[in-house]
Image (cartoon, rainbow, N blue to C red; front, side, top):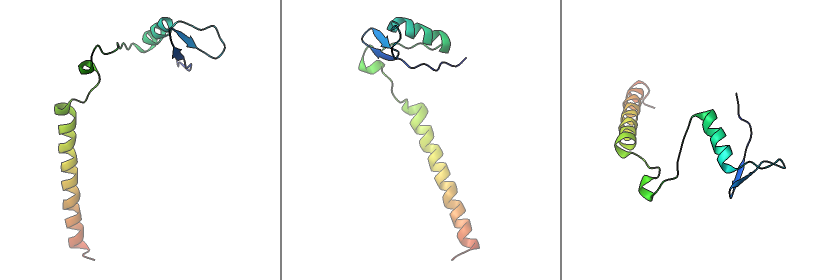
Length: 84
């Protein structure tokens, strides 16, 4: 089942384009029931979304260095084949 409705959340009510507005709580509960996802606002700046450097940036940096190294090796091989 696809959910194709869009809601503008303003104050405690939603605007659905002329229909009777549903409360924000009702809309959020319907979305959570459909998606199975649950999120709460961060209590502080530290609880908010962030990047985990040790599990995201460092491995991606290593992968990029490896890919760059492979590219350099392939360029070296290519210039041996066709030095022009």
